[in-house]
Image (cartoon, rainbow, N blue to C red; front, side, top):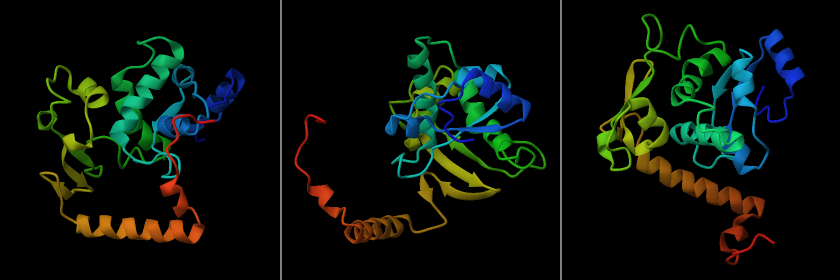
Length: 203
């Protein structure tokens, strides 16, 4: 199940009984003001909860490191309890629990012999934002950004090294994406929204 912002206690028990897996999309839920999923209750009930971005229509940046931080902070402010969820649990939700939610925990989600080598190298020293480092997991969840990702390996293949994408011509693809997006907006008639007047109030 995805989002699950309205699950009640009975539905959580039923989900556990049937071993339903959850895709938690906190940034999307905030962006659309959908509500707050009862993640601590789900975790206490033994449900598998994976962390996700959702689609570009409800999460512009598609940034999983950003989702780590918002996933933690949303629960803390909603429950007015800074201890309601840990940085370690958010990292598990983004990795091994996400793999479990997809039924792929034997292939991905952790670095183990026999699994695909999917990982990134996190370098907090690349930015002042993530420095100083005291605890690597807390720093990744609360202080890091995509600019701290130095190297990315997918299925054993290095796809980014020293912050340079190796598998595609990134500037060309970004330029093409901008053009395609502009063409789509014109065809949909929404390009006029780019020139809307300044709005200090929403009403």
